[in-house]
Every structure is written in structure tokens, then in C-alpha cells.
Image 1 (cartoon, one colour):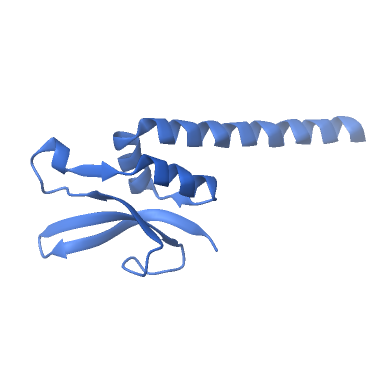
Image 2 (cartoon, one colour):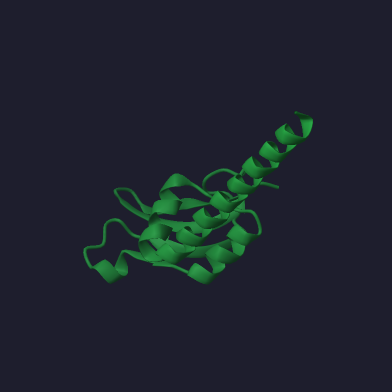
Length: 110
């Protein structure tokens, strides 16, 4: 099951409100979610009422293998930059490990 953290649209016509949800990547946008980890209100004027993210829950789901969509990643980076920083560090470390493994295999075969 490919988990995604993405936005689910709510609200009424011309007054969108989004929930940051964890769900199976094959589900529709407004499908059944596993957990709500935050919300985003682009219409609100006050800064503190625009965005809320549960950073600990986002990190929990990322550790379980969930992937952030582009917009969700931008919102999480705005609300909790340390979560995105740790996610990128893990991704970079994984790529470096794979590169080192490939180099070692090439050297062994040569």
C-alpha cells in the first residue's frame, strides 16, 4: 500500500478549505483517509489561522514510508521545516549509500 500525505478539499464553493490527510495513494482526492494530520485555509487573512500541521504525526507517517505530495511538502516545510529537513537528510543518506554500494560492486567486478 503506497501511503501519501496530501490535501483533501473541503469547504464550499469559492471558499476552499483543505485538510492534510494520510491515505492510500490509489484513493480519490476526497476518499477515506487514515488520519488527519493538519489543515490549510488559504482564504483566511490571519496568519495563525491559515495553517496547522501536527509535525510529530507527519514524521511518524514519513517513517512508515508515506510520501508527501509537492503542495503538502511545501505546506509542511512552512509549518514545520525540521520535519522536511530530516526527511531530505534521510533521502540523501539513502542515495549516498546506494551510490557507494554501486561503486563497490563495480570495483569488485573490475
